[in-house]
Length: 130
Image (cartoon, rainbow, N blue to C red):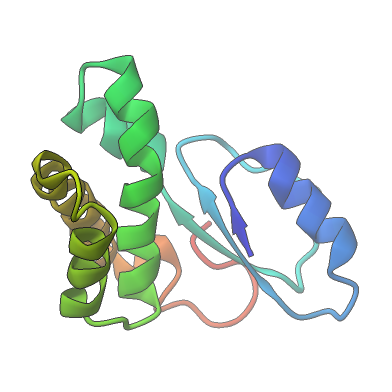
């Protein structure tokens, strides 16, 4: 599950009754203290990355989703060539959008690869990324 905000994370927490699961969330914001211990928490500071890279609020909102795709793809071990091609295909009719979206994708991927423990990739099951 990818949780981009606390409400989504809490909804997923209620839905996942199997005792297994991983929640990916924007770690710029703090987690509530009462989260279950049986769900892996993987955090990437998406808002902080956006705020550092973009001054325009509209760009921050638009590219935040692409940044999380980049981070998530790195954590899942998806080859960058695959995600780069998906971006190129998605924006083939709007070629001016390819480069900025690839840059946003790289921001997320680079952060996750440079900070695997902070993102939860190197932690044992349980409270990852906390």
